[in-house]
Image 1 (cartoon, chains in turn yellow, purple):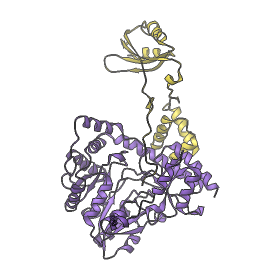
Image 2 (cartoon, helix red, strand yellow):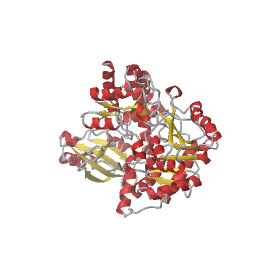
Image 3 (cartoon, each protein chain N blue to C red):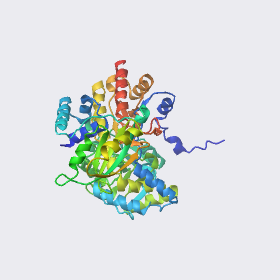
Image 4 (cartoon, rainbow over the protein chains, first blue to last red):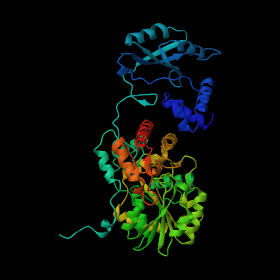
Length: 163
Length: 385
């Protein structure tokens, strides 16, 4: 991992759709060097995938997201890993993290509507062994996702030409 | 009625960019590479701290020199980052932007008849400030061959018995040229031999892409005879906040302070509070912006060379300064026709004085998308010539 790799990661994290050619010009690398480095970063699983930040509210499919906090009794030898990995396999679980503080695991879950989310939690998550407590927080509105603000911002006014 | 306008005011030329400014305003869908300021918003932590301080009622004058907390923080920052040693108590004034710093620096050292050497192409204010102080601006040409550094021989050639001071600005607006410690050393010998004062405008100090900026006052024995100007506008995207600073040995500083207290009293307190926060917490924001400028520079300068506008690689600031000589047009013609035919605004190099002719200044402080579109349009334009 060197400065050039960090450049590539920063560029791709912000916009993974740029062409290798354009990235090459920006980083003073050749096109094939960019491609090789990106391949290596993918192979090393530093790059875990390429996705698009969607404002689903605008896309209008009515999908609902919720943050679910779980208190979990850890297992001997495995801690939280086995249960966390099991939960991760559900399609509905978009993110899953182990947290410090008053609860242990945090899930971000999406569903077609509120009933869909609550059914998932009550039927699949809550009954699992070792889960002691759940708290479900429905997301009412997103203002920022992955570094991208989702609200309209007025372009600042600049002088058209200045010295 | 008499003509009330002073001879001094009449003597200074109107801004060379005014005509373009007016023209751009009448047009739609213009991509402007003519803006000498960052396109980023001021980092929010800076805005937030200033808003909070206003809510707390921090709306009064500050001491003439500026907030003690800001000067303390600056003094530490300059020492840590540039090895520049200035005492917060008596070698530093917070000014209303570098513009004010420049004005009071020039006025505190220039007497009528004094000659002030100016490394050009340069920012447009230097010569008029000298003229307004009754001095005579003497341009020194910096050339592309020298990567737009100040050439010691060119400097020596222009020195006369009346020479009093030299104004330099590296990293440079409009050329993006920088001066290394070695480059400054060569100049320092001449400045010291001829007993000149150095005014060094280092407002782009944070924006260098290959090497770390070298502060002029740290080279040789220049400190005793240098006024260092700098500010928050470019590094922290704070142009509208109007916060700069002037650093100098106490004797020079006291002279500048007298003028500052009569004409400005103090820099706006809200801006000063924001500047404290900039030094405290915006290092990463600044680094991210510098990194983005570097990527844009690579993209844009490669593009200019590809479409047939030869451009040296600017190592600092956020300007590319390509030559338009091969097109057969003058810089003013090129800029006018490019704007009218392809809606891309650039600034003709001659606006920046000697050595600027046959070049155009393109600020790459715009989004990469706009830079790419501008390159496409410029290529189209060149094809029609």
